[in-house]
Amino acid sequence: TTMPSAENGWGYRLVLLFNTGSAEPARSLCGDVGKIAAPAGGSGELTVSAALCRGKDPMTVAFARTGAASLDDPAASGLFNELTAVLFPNRPGLMPNRNIPF
Image 1 (cartoon, one colour):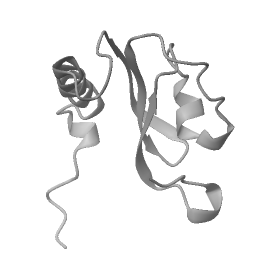
Image 2 (cartoon, helix red, strand yellow):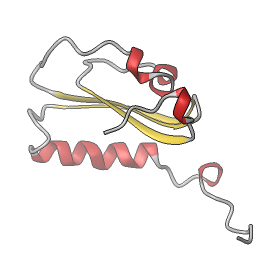
Image 3 (tube, helix red, strand yellow):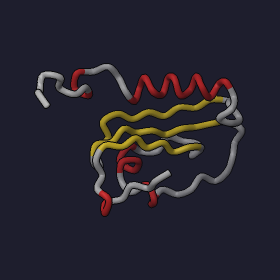
Image 4 (cartoon, helix red, strand yellow):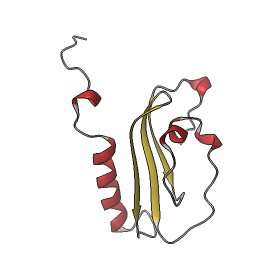
């Protein structure tokens, strides 16, 4: 894992924050994640706050929750399937311009 920081340049990145219990504001996720407080403890469910960031700006954000006790639970797979569709929608504004020659 890596911790993006201003010194390393922000660029594009996907930020996933597990088991916070509630949705983390998008600006916090796209900022310095080292400043986000650690979760208090397990509640028997899996929660994920997620953001696709460009620099410090959120492009898409999502919060998901399931009764899965761990990442090995089949319900966690469903959570990530739905989360992926929200974070990476098929929208022209988020797709690269394919008309630009390289």
